[in-house]
Each structure stands twice: as C-alpha cells, then as structure tokens.
Image 1 (cartoon, rainbow, N blue to C red):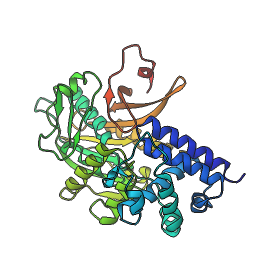
Image 2: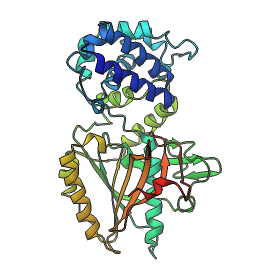
Image 3: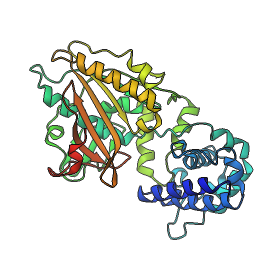
Length: 367
C-alpha cells in the first residue's frame, strides 16, 4: 500500500505526542493515520510526501498546517476544540475534534499542501533552560577575577532566534528562581529536584552580542513568522503558548539577527574574542544536518576549541538526543576550550524540566 510508511510515521508521532503531554495531537494523528490508509483528505494533502523519511516530520507539518487554519480563523468548528484559541478539548472524548479536523483539511487543501512545504520550526523556548545552565557552569569554571565574562552567543539552527534572548528569561521551580524578575518569559517547573549548585549561585548572564543561523530563518516580528511559530506548538499545551507569546514580545524590541546560512558556513565566520566568552549552542537540530556538513561543523568547532585561551575562551554547548544503552536521552553537554566534553544535565525534549544525573549514570560517559 502506498501510504503504509506514512501511516507508520503518523502512529509513531502520535505516540511521541502522547508521551510529551499532548493528548489532542495524539488523538488527531491516530485518526489521520486511519484517513491516510482509507485514501481520505489527509492522504490527498500529503500526496507526494507519503514516503518522506522520519526527519521530514510530515505528521507535524500537517498538524501545523491545520493549527494555522485555526489561528487564522479559517476553521471555526475545529477552533471550538483547540485550547490555544479558547476552545476545549476533553481527553475523555478524544475523537470529538476529528470530524472538524478532517473537514478543515478537505476544505483548505491548497493551503495545507503549501504549508507542508515548510519544515516544522517550533523554536522551543523551554530549551533555553539548558543554555542558561551551561553558561552558568562555564562562568564558574572560568572564575574570572573581574566577574562573569560577557557572552558572545552564536546559535546553530536558530529558527526565529528566540533562544538567543535566553538571558532575558526567568527560570523557576520549587525553592529556585533565576533571571530577571520582570521577564515576560517564565520557564516554570524548570528543575526536577535541586538545580545544580553552579546555577543556584550564578550571577545573571550578560549577553553582549547575539546572532544565529538557519537554512530557513523565521522573522518573529512579522505576522507570518509569528503564525508559523504558533502553529507548530501543540494546541493543548498552554504553558508553551504563553512562553512563546512572551518571547515574541521580547523579540519585538531586542535585535537577534539570524543569518540564512547552514551551520558549517556560519561557523567559518566565528572567531574567539579577547575579554569575552564565545559560545556556540544548538538544541535538537543535529539530526536535520546532513552527515557531510556535520563533519565540517565538527571541524570548525575543533578550530575554535584550539583557539580558546583564558583571555578569549570558547564554549560549545549542545542539548541533543543521544543513545544510552537502549534509550534515547536528551543530554546537555559542554566543552570548554579543548577540554573533554562533560554531561551537565538531562531534560525532557522541550527543555522542562531538567535534572542532574546520578554519579553512576552511564550517560556521564558520553562525550
């Protein structure tokens, strides 16, 4: 059957959505998988993409396209089931939104098919929790006598550049807070258990220069860009919606340039600088970079690590999935200068909550 692969991918993504706390997305994707097999509107929508590999995330593209219809006021019957626009989803009746979802796809096929040409870009703000953790760790390791070094932040796969604004976010959990008290972005429930000592005691970071790259950057200050970012959030996860809205408000007044470049080409223009901590950071983007380009990225990171010195240090921070035994786990790793990489923390894929690892955890052997 021509849609067998897509059906399997939709069920796999539904399982991931359920595990990550979006029962609405899970229920819709399971019904959409059945619609693919039956040759319904969803099959017509993704025609030509039914054999796309997993990283193309066709299921997420379809969810995003229909959410964009809802956010644009073009699917009012479905909006009644979408919490992101004030609707109500009842997990006890998970199939209730399906007829309106299917009808929206059928009524707006050209819109949906055009939307499927764009890659999913959530620019997940919660992952800044790991960036701030890594910055605080590096500042402790450097122990500058004049206080924390100003940060020159460079992000690979920046999307809209929202996490380049991480120093403007506030993290909170039980007995812990970090960041500007008046921030419109609050990363609540940031830690499971005690946050690491270097973060609890850290002074605020000062990002003096911020820029990133992405093959298809989004302008968060444009109506089209904001719609794209909102559409790829799962409509029943209101804390993520609130975090994104706060980050969009910050982006309106804080320049964070994102160049339309691949990661390797961008890094070729990055150098260390005296009196500042130069940081290259990325989060859950490595899987989208072709293997040959990633080899070039690793070469550039090695160049920067070799150039690192006490007066002009370099830090590579990554929050990426890694296989540990039979599991895929999401780990924050840090490499300061030419030192071996260290595993600092683990987190859920969206960055919240994070937690430190036990001393005998096999993930600590990752490098």
